[in-house]
Image 1 (cartoon, rainbow, N blue to C red):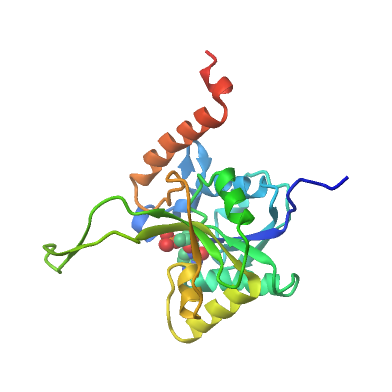
Image 2: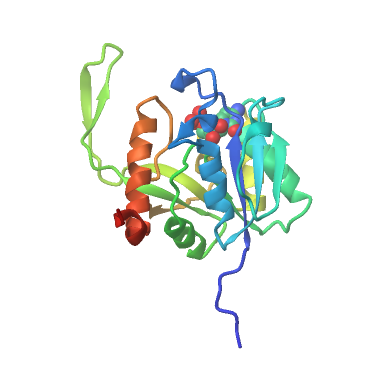
Length: 246
Ligand code: C5P
């Protein structure tokens, strides 16, 4: 009988070598507690638990003092590489390690260390998309009105929001496409803020998939209490019987 369960056919890359300057804390934001558990633990455990994930490559800062103390359950292979001076360099270091071990066509998911609320449904939907050279990524359509300001903070323009999205992670690409795109961007002195930007620069047009709005990125201090509320809401809706018992 054919096996209907999905295959573990994707590697995940988690760039976690940033210092999170916008958070204003001594401890990098990926190690701050979210409902009592470090943000990075949530992120790694959600990825590692998913059936489509074969393993994880984690990019850390050199001599990261927090990593060794991190407790987490990871039933998949996990390899640590030293990240670089930028997010793109950190992801490229992980891809370089993978390139020596996996086929060039291998699908890769790159996921921010600081998006701890990634839901299994979103991983599943992203991995189920047909994968071509262009790749695909999670995003949410803009719903607020968008303004452009001048240096004094005064509105100069209302930007039509049709067709505008804010993008999330995971972002999914073939290993060789993303590796070449990031290497090309870095060699040209460009600093892509996400993987798709590097792939676009190489002439591709990644496809956006509407993701859940609770897949937030922890960036500034109010994001942590917001993430705790969203985590509680996820737990209530995913395990209604556990959370309604008194
Ligand atoms: O700074 P930002 O929030 O955009 O960082 C997004 C992700 O990229 C974080 O998970 C951060 O740790 C990672 N990063 C990295 N190497 C860097 C800078 C950021 O892995 N040099």
